[in-house]
Length: 599
Image (cartoon, rainbow, N blue to C red; front, side, top):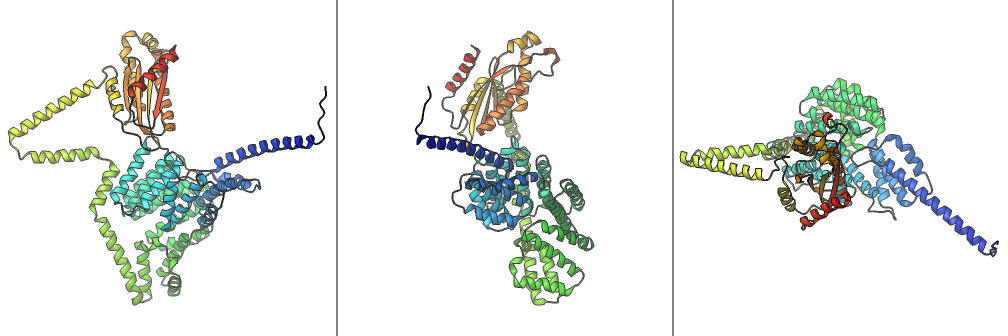
């Protein structure tokens, strides 16, 4: 039987078919654009792959993009511009983009745009950087846009914590470093080390700063791409030269030159020429400075940053001063008088620049101009001397930097012993006896808490410590895992029933090697182990626990006597963002899950 449709229905059917086709096409296109956005995007502390820029530009040229897609791609492109030294162009684009209507201000792209603006202002030492860093931090969290949260937090500690003492700022830095030390990527750790170096540099502790920069550089080489491979190395070279380590500074310049040849783009060449300028000016080697200055000027065309242009003009005038070229020096001073803002704030805090400034007036025999120049130079020298004499800052920095808690304990113990010498011999003996009794009591309690077969915490102690854990921080959780050895008896038969404790000890050693010092690890049952992680995000917890189980299962992979038998384990996981209040019920449910699985 053939169905006949009225003529008026046919156009409607065609419209529905076409609408379905275009909706599916639009969905597929949207997914494709999203994939490109994810592909070209880089974390805040690294540079994107320069080879992807052409694909990004081609995608941006499409007329079918939504406002949000175009915004996300444009923000990613600004990241490319920053990494190639084109800060002015990137800033103009970003400031225009964030004021557009109909963009998602909770998105990664918006948070990234705000952070990038803060970073560009940072390179110019513009106080507005703090406003944007604070906003970027508020738009992110340790879970949401975590790279931006970390970068903005470090920048705020470094530049925007004026009410905090130096020791407090460094303390916050090392807290961040400690938080990332176990699970942080080399890129994250490099970013943190670089920020610590900046704080040391602000103290005038250039040797300590150089050490942090070099550690950051070596970590960054593992993951950074393109020009980001040399960005931290510049800071290390400046700090090495400022601390008198000229040989090491020159060695690092050679390394920078080799990286420049390897990467081979205009921005890394600019950074290499920049390092030579800084080094030879610091060494007062004006002949070599004059030789490399034209190359530095040519390399300037690769960047758009007024600071670097001011640096070139300073160095060019340094050569005029060296040659007693009075008209050249006068031209520079006249340009300063006409526009005082052309001198970057960083120059006004640089003793080398203030010395150069004073020398110009001396060459011109301008006593009136020399007086304020000398006053500025003298004030900065005095300020730096006061800062360097602040023993509390340096001691706090050293304590935080080295984490020498054992040494602090030893100092306290020595001080107590010194005071105890005032007491009579009898009192000293009694004190030693009491101390010995306390020590033995502690040893006794510690022995009761340990499982003799594995030397791990026993079940009672493990559960007691887990019960005492505080509520996790926002965005963090408590993760508990129980590992059940499903083929324990088979392993015993293979290795020998008399060696059951040996099997347990080997498995315990494996677990001790992979868990972190702050984790709670114990023997939960005859064939079971318990592990608790505190203050960890859920995704990291699951990944970490899977890694622990894999290591457990591979315990005897190099043990010839076991043949092809491996440890086989089941894992039950419980994760909560709240304080534990019913641990017994939770553990019962986890054990029940094993029983159900076995049945």
